[in-house]
Length: 262
Length: 287
Ligand SMILES: Nc1ncnc2c1ncn2[C@@H]1O[C@H](COP(=O)(O)OP(=O)(O)OP(=O)(O)O)[C@@H](O)[C@H]1O
Ligand SMILES: [Mg+2]
Image (cartoon, rainbow over all chains, first blue to last red):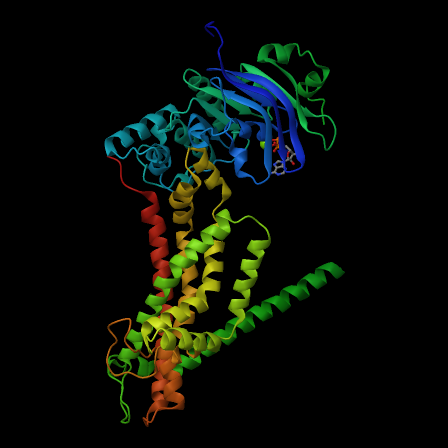
């Protein structure tokens, strides 16, 4: 990887989040470097999804959610009063665990985001659709069936369609919440390769249960853990992926990574 | 084994109950068609003008009344139902107000239709001075049908998976845009199906319309303010009040025709719903 000075695309500062009265995460602090992949690992229920959904304020949609601390995107706190959440979600896109294409055609799925910002010109839309599908490594499989429903594709293809749909709005950051847990190993490989390519232009955060995947795709890793039942999830260790997987500084990280954890 | 025997017994019982339901339905349909099908498909009957005293009258104006009334009712109630259902399903916070609205709607749904008829008579026919007309009937039926229409529309909207909403919001759509672009189009076939039940009820309703729309006409109603005579009300009228000697035939033929029309509308709506799903949702072709 070419050595360039790392700038931080996002900075998470003392972030805590409550579902009504239940504190799901507490005092999480770490950086998301630009044009790198940051992995978020930890046992089920430690608040990984909760955390990534704070990054584009998708948690706002759940009743009773409260956030403390800061999420800084390019030196602006996204939780500050009056911050434009719609604009935020265009800048910070998201790919979900289960592929969730709309019940529309492949074309309409990808064109959905651009149409939202008022792009109506057919040529321009055609271009964006083709370009996004190419970047998501799906174009050659679907170029003849663009009018068919996106839901007729295989799970892996659907997931790449969802990635294309996000790319089409040209976000700066893409969040992946366990993007491969519902698809087979071959499709997983494709998506990992794709992420490596997208690194040139996008900053990415990936939540994963799969240690090998985290080790393979990410540059930085954050490890989260719930110490005891009912307590909030906390960040245990954050650092360079290589260091973390070969020489973790916290014993709990080591136990988790080597699979000796509940 | 005790468990598996209970299981078998339950299977048999439920299967039998299902069969009884189907048999009952089949019996009613066959009975109605057997009595009236031949009359119903006679063009002189379904295209003819009704007679006041002589035998041999038709029921064409009544068919038009029924269809006109159903269309008007849906036109009035569907936008209200969709709007309210969007509110209930997408915006309303769970709580007291929501429960209260639901309670009111459920109460409204249990009222006998004659109550709505008298209400419509008092408000639209007398107070608004519309006299007996299609519009008075349509408003009355719209109120009558609002609870079920709202409930089924709401169910159709709730069936849209949350993951679609999330995906849309994540692409930078506002809540309202998400509802317009994703939720409603996805729910539309379901919403269309959910209007079927009310249409069947509108076509079959007599108590709510005899006091609001009218019972007997000879000419086709044109304006919404014209007096009309929907089929179901006319059947009741012919059976109990009419002077024509062939009233039995009119009643049987009318009932069969009503059944046929409701079935036809049902299948048409199903077909339109499927077609919409296949064409509209998939969008334009790319070169
Ligand atoms: N909508 C919600 N309302 C209340 N509590 C929630 C909600 N979503 C998650 N939680 C709770 O917050 C905690 C963290 O959940 P979260 O889904 O973020 O964990 P996770 O690390 O993503 O787990 P997994 O690996 O299983 O996806 C859990 O205890 C969970 O029960
Ligand atoms: Mg999760």
